[in-house]
Amino acid sequence: MSDSPSGCTEQRSAVTEAEVEALVRGICFKTGPPRTLGVELEWLVHELRDPRLPASPERLEAAYAALRTLRLSSALTVEPGGQLELSSAPATSLTEVIGSLSADLDAVRAVLREAGLVLNGFGQDPWNPPLRFLHEPRYDAMEQCLDRFGPEGRAMMCSSASVQVCLDAGYEEPGPLGYGRRWWLAHHLGAVLLAAFANSPVACGRTTGWRSTRQSLWSAMDPGRAGAPPLDGDPRAAWARHVLDAPVMCVRADEGPWGVPEGMSFRDWTRAPSPPGRADLDYHLTTLFPPVRPRGHLELRMIDAQPGEDGWIVPLAVTVALFEDPEAAEVAYRTVKPLAERAGPMSAPFNPLWIAAARSGLADPELHEAAVACFDAAAEALPRLGAADDVQAAVAGFTERYVAQGRCPADDLLSRLHGKDIRT
Image (tube, rainbow, N blue to C red; front, side, top):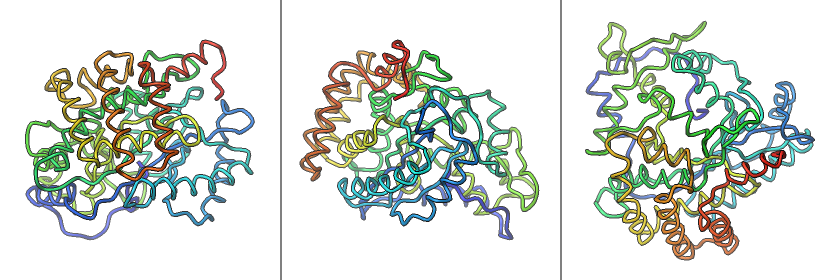
């Protein structure tokens, strides 16, 4: 959510419906070299002395001011509930992105430790109700808009955190690295990744019935904002239609609160007496939160934040291996192809496959079987991608502890809750 522009209106010419479609088709699926990757890490920030306690706004303000003095290679931003996000610079290899982001995290943790604060990796805050830290026109409007569909929007804004893997859209030609195959694969392998890395079974100190409560929030929201387009046609055309038909979250203003229209799609806006401009289109694109978001590259948004200081490395490495290595990509495609029938005609994350992944994790037999095959393929691919020994060992350890046993990190949290201690 923090990747969006925050400026208000400006003098510019309007865009027509046809121009919007052409622009979206041109900017959201850029194919061909250079091949780069990245990752965006969201973290909850709690008191170091007791991680069940949220940090006060005043303490967060002071700590974040200190963080902004650091020289980082990653972009550092703050989410509406005070979550901290580090977005790596585009990298040419897995080793490069892990090295640069790990160094930045070390520096950030040192500053936070001096302030008595700590980063925690949970997909959903297990202890505290949503409380907004940022009070800006964008988030005021977002809250007003999302409240129309229930309380899930506020929890998503203020209490959730994720590992978002960013990959090139792919090549123009067909095959395992072609953009059409990668788009399809992301929406079906995405359910397997969701299940394997689910890490948010608790909210306000109680179990929710979901291995990924974070994903359940998205599944309860407006499909026009949180859903994927249909997968039965050309990805560019489908996404362009989706963008035009998606509801407008807000109309920015130079002064005062932003307008929050009800029931107006972007297509409707282009036909209105005061139509939007190119900047409004750019802004509209940032208010759509599907599980896979095309932004010139593909942003995979379904993975919960992970436990431990380096837990994020495993989902990054596995996802990169299954998309960037042609052999592993082919194995992943064949493995998840039968899951498409279970997904049915409904879009992610609202179809039965995604609901099962969020609710059951790898306790679901079909998802467990698929995860075993995909993690094995990723393990074989990582040496070919030049992954360091410690990265390969981390993936192997995760596979042994969770995937082989049909478990996910959420199961550890549930076990600790039953033991009445979920502080770590």
